[in-house]
Image (cartoon, rainbow, N blue to C red; front, side, top):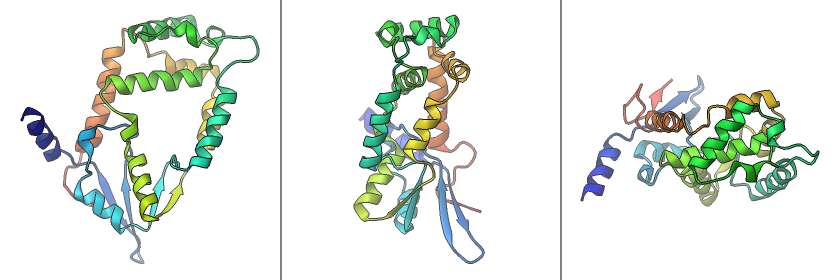
Length: 220
């Protein structure tokens, strides 16, 4: 009973922002922010989101992660670029402070950072981000982009990707050590509570649309 009451409460406050954009010649586009990790309570999607999807001929996404060929190619490229082959280790590419922070963060999650010393910082970023997402009670397998991509595939809708998986991987792989160090520095046992609060706040802002809560698309 308590779980059902909680779900009903969540549904009452489940109003993610969506904008309806109409061109001078009457063409319509719906715009919605994407969350790559959600909870089971987020499905089914609100009616106005489902209706907008059903009316659309094309689904435009950040990148088409449902494209198995592109995903496989990216995975192979990821494997080729995730580890050092020049004799250096993670310690050689991060500051002592950042490495120490990461070590405490991994330890707090029952992992040993030393086992990842051969991996490059960009891959470590994906590992700690997945840890933080899980800490916040979110599931990366329930992202809205993947959900809509699966529906689009089932219904035969055209899919347009703004960026390719390969483009995103190239960008991540080629970030400088300095940028990687800055992005990883905040991941520490000391900051776990704050990180969890940030992810939770982001999720709540997306789910309830703190700035606009009308249960229908906003016209532009």
